Amino acid sequence: MTISLERSRNTSPAQALDLQRHGATWQDYVALRDDTDLDCQKISFNDGWLWANMGKEGPNHAAFSDFMTAIFFLWAMLHPEEVLQSYGRCLIEKPDVQACAPDLVLYRGDDIPRWQPGEPRRISTTRHRLPDLVGEIGDTTLSLDLDEQKQLYASLGISEYWVIDVKGRRLFGFGLAERGSYEVIEESRVLAGLPLGLVEQAIERLETETNTAAANWLMQQLQEQP
Image (cartoon, rainbow, N blue to C red; front, side, top):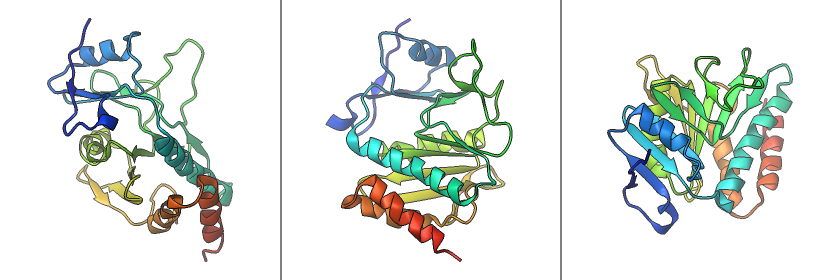
């Protein structure tokens, strides 16, 4: 089966391999997901919207993604009694309805998905619960991450969503409100006691420092918190 996808809006050279289609079906998504001739690095489906990225991960995206994942480990080191599991970039599906592959995927607490031999290599809501926190590294996809992806994660009911603006060195944090949409938050609800403003200060340091140096600085700040 051949799928016809359109270039994403405001396409730049860096976004040349971002493709999307409106009015798509779940069968369209599955055909794209399973097409061995394509190399989908990321793919999303929600309410007829189908998006895929065929490009390779760049240095900026990789550095920021590794840094943000390191924050999960720093918080876990300070809270050894808590159970966390990171599954960054893992494909998540609500069969026939929605699919996504967030850059950041974090589970906290019980019932963390465990892959069993013979199962599809993805997280499915038919077998697993949804993550507690997801995030996107907005390098070339910031507008999409703050719009379509945000709507997708809110619709799925994921408690917390982070968007990292790579070029602007900013962090947008959202928590799920009772009405089912996201509201801006200043402190993480999943990683209790973590001020997102402090995380943003660490992100700003990536302008001149390595991601490991920025993570070390953040660890020192967290250790000094009352």
